[in-house]
Length: 384
Image 1 (cartoon, helix red, strand yellow):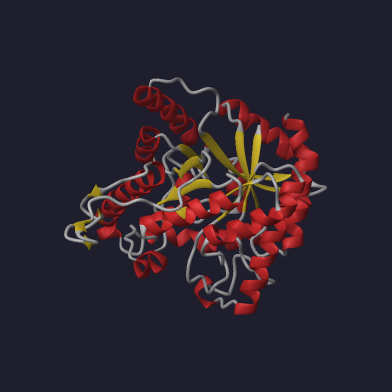
Image 2 (spheres, rainbow, N blue to C red; image 1 turned 90 degrees about the horizontal axis):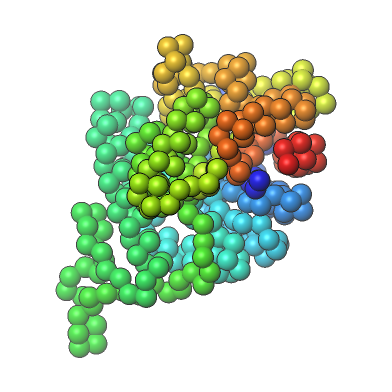
């Protein structure tokens, strides 16, 4: 088993919960944002000390609410790498359409090389129009349901081309690419008596690197497996996930001609909150859980839950903590209770890579560190 740590990188909030303020009314100060950034680095160092294998930031922009305040994991990564020795460093995920793909490839190579080969390339398409559109991307939105399918198709196409460009540039001494969205090098560039027909990325990775992509839908399963990336699932009901998990292995074998071992190239993100008693864990988890879905619900991220008809939940439904626990998507309780539930999921999936997401939105970073300590010391030994 390998374990990662995944954080939203949120500012501590004394009033987290289901009631006011509304997410759009929150305003975090620049000082709070920067203090949070420093504390996230501390948690990364503590994660290595506790024996975790991965540390994942997340990439979001313009988050005045304070929910996710580190916009550039490729810049933060080398800082964490200087303070650690072995933990792998990435983000869940790098939102590729919000980057120029060649600048992304340059920055990833730099981070990966400075870390001594510990960079993890984990990518996704993005979910938030307020971030995506100012940075040149397109994203389907529940705020515009009539255009959502069209926007989603455009996002997929541009994302696929960006990944093609990144792969070519990272893995070839010379490359060119001519697609619908990207044209490298464009025709007609003069250079010292000739014309530019190819480009060379500098630097490129000096060591192999892991490649992952987040998956929430069956359609993405096939695309990720055929590309040869690992799949990452978060907030997806185990029944839905098991089918996608198995389909991923089938497509992988069909495309690459190799059979995947149990859990190979697949990772599950697990939401956990641990306390000395079940009742205390529930009380501790509730404010962060409610704030989390007050924030994410309008973006339609609850479709990973199972609705009353057994199909994905409606995008206008907001789950309660009890519903999240009943669907076994949020593991809340004593260390023994969490270990028992995780052992069940591991057995069902054959999983061997788990990323731990502490249910702590709004809490201090002392609480994040305490939760990671509890998991490492009291839960992980029961899963060995």
